[in-house]
Length: 240
Image (cartoon, rainbow, N blue to C red; front, side):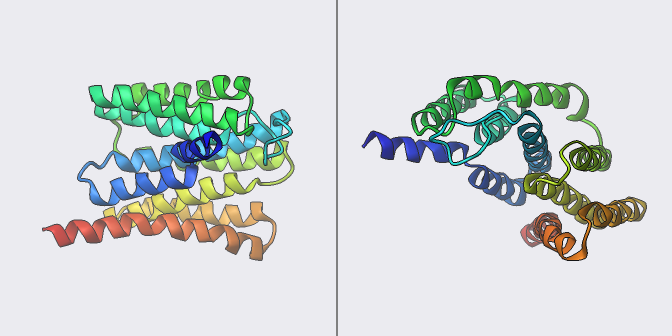
């Protein structure tokens, strides 16, 4: 019974579920800031994967993953719930978001996915990045925001290949996703110089991937996240 409850609670921090919620908010909400949430979640995937492979801290023997710190789910959930709190500033969210994060953390420990040190230390990373976002990036123009994170994800791809020797799949998903989201957003806003820059970056990704089939496999994420701004534009037009 307790294991069933813990398994259900673990879905609070499921990265696929939280990304789906963020995308739905972005498409159907009038608040344009949800684009920031999607980019931050993709960014969270990138640095988490790089740190896991660099640090190589073993996960508990009961965990299905090879490395423990940082916890992918707790990292993702902290970024998601932390962003909601600093953006909406609702008293209800100030209670619900930390409670959700605590329950998700307890469930991962109980299920043996991570130990207590993983769960306690992992939130420090997204909290630092959310602080930088809130102080410096939150109010800048959308196109500049996209360029900043495309540049960062590009640099982290190179760092990953240089230091680790390969490109972890989460780094590919995050960086290709950010790039696809940026190209589609630039296309809608008719910022053709920005599109040209993004396509040049995509060509560089081909060189990093090393071979064309692998590059095409990664481009699935470029296309997937590139669809979302277009869908939002269509739903916005339909509401008028």
